[in-house]
Amino acid sequence: MALEALVFDVDGTLADTERDGHRVAFNDAFREFGLDWDWDVALYEKLLAVTGGKERIRFYVDSFNPDYIKPVDFDDLVVALHKAKTRHYTELLAKGAIPMRPGVARLLQEARDAGLRLAIATTTTPENVTALLEHSLDKDAVNWFEVIAAGDIVPAKKPAPDIYHYALEKMNLQPEQCIAFEDSENGIRSSLGAKLPTIVTINDYTRNHAFDGAMSVLSDLGEPGQPAQTIAGKAPSQGHISVADLKHWV
Ligand code: XBP
Ligand code: MG
Image: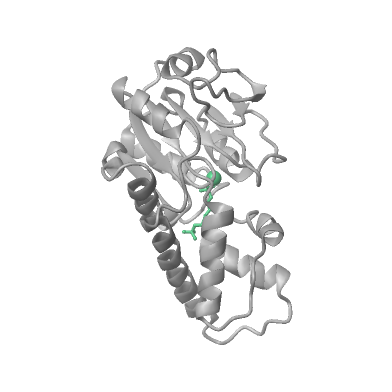
């Protein structure tokens, strides 16, 4: 089947948002609520095992903060904390704090020029996606994507395949007409679970993850003159991922 669409994860794939974005915003929210919780870079790596911010806060309390006594309204506290975190995170993005990863803006433009359809499949909150696209890519970039499948739109977050199933259904496409772009083990479990061929671009938090079944595992998407390193699977023919390669690979 011919390639019709590219489906992108957001966090870690479009931009390195976790360490200097989400983590910082969680800590800002904890401080705002008078909590002495501090997620340092090493702890956050462990917390990333669970996707979704609200789910991650609960995971932290249950697995890493045994002395904390939950108030009766703990569920409401998690929701309020997460709302504050989203505010801090989007404020950070509005300052242009997090750039797109190498090759992302170029490939998106190439794909649009080639008439490929674009979608997003992420566990992050929809406002976060909009803020990142607007401030780090292009004021109009939200409109480049036919479907933005994000956050609580499906109850089971990655590694469940549901968010990809949702995006495919909205686009009325079969998985083999698409390529997914992911950065993490939870991400590729989700995309492969929905049967999408998947290209992985690793980052500092995910370089030791298992990426079995990936079509290609790369350092990044690469740019002309700034080639990506191929870690496993197919290698880009000119050092950077191009639409011509992608059409060839499916
Ligand atoms: C992203 C996530 C999200 C973000 C935080 O995973 O796990 O939870 O870290 O976003 P993926 P929210 O890249 O696999 O989609 O706080 O808005 O949930
Ligand atoms: Mg990701």
